[in-house]
Length: 129
Image 1 (cartoon, helix red, strand yellow):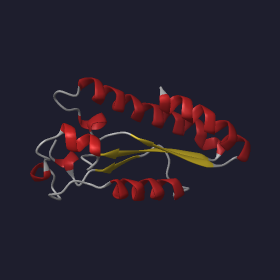
Image 2 (cartoon, one colour; image 1 turned 135 degrees about the horizontal axis):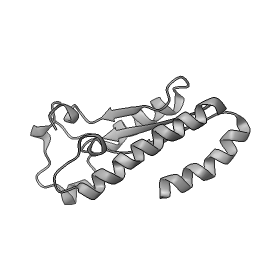
Image 3 (spheres, one colour; image 1 turned 30 degrees about the vertical axis):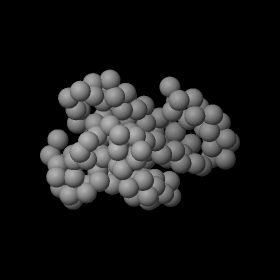
């Protein structure tokens, strides 16, 4: 719900300006699912659907809407939840960093001809799930 409320708030200004970019943060699990994460997977899948629908609505107004789908990212939360960290599962053999996700967000925020896309930023994890 927070994403929807935030989008509603910023879209008022973007529509007036006839331009803008929204980049939501989803998860590879929203595309692939994961045992033990049913509710999380469903919420992220819903976010992806929301993003695509909003992209269709906002494109004629000059606003792009996309979503980043990270895999494992080294944060305080994942360090406590996932032990040991699953580097061996990931084709690139390492956990992503918050800075790498930020780079993907920056790319989509500045990509004026990309909308309605899901950008996987997961070290190739989606290839093995």
